[in-house]
Length: 252
Image 1 (spheres, helix red, strand yellow):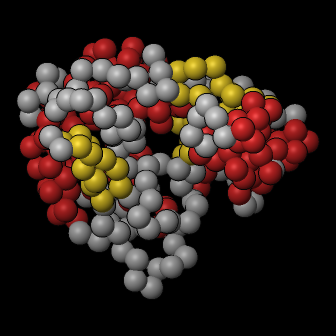
Image 2 (tube, one colour):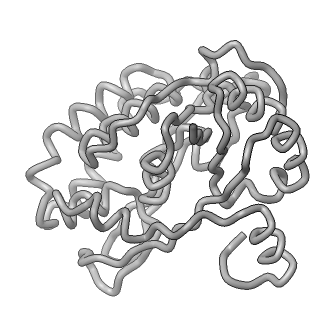
Image 3 (spheres, helix red, strand yellow):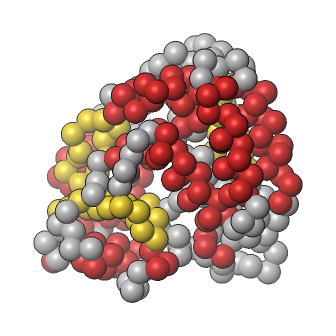
């Protein structure tokens, strides 16, 4: 049983969906603390002069300890600015017309839920449908699991009877420190190894790490084939320790 656990981010990049695609169960970590100016509330699209940052406005005054699941969208009509920005920069993309009407409906419906976590999860599920990713999806807020940091991840894995935990490489620093907590429960930790694939993109030269909307509008039904082409064999704990020591091979 392979499990991945990650925060629901706004309009994620292709690598996020590669992580979902390679596990049996994916858990949205939606009850962690909200972090302002993080990928929880922002992401990038491609424009003629490079990447453009889109940010979801969130209520923060007097809400310093709020969780991601509690983060409320502060300007419900702001989604129209995001819609216009996406339309302006992608209306000439080969598959724009195929996906645009439904995407707009999903974006508006998610935004009008007035909750950042729900918005992100609504969009992620829609992307999964377009990519034909059919996985069991759960939310940490709905599971009987407690703890902080790695303790919580271990408890979720144990609850799911998982023997493999696949993590995004960005979590390596604290997971390496806590790896023995997983080992004590006989859970093998591996780290995603993803090399962003290139594809025909508006406004060359190619720029990686845009939202997956860039991939979908540009390559359409080939999106999953392109997405999977960036997957490499996961890193083991020992390999990541070596990479961090030598500072080579991958951005950690």
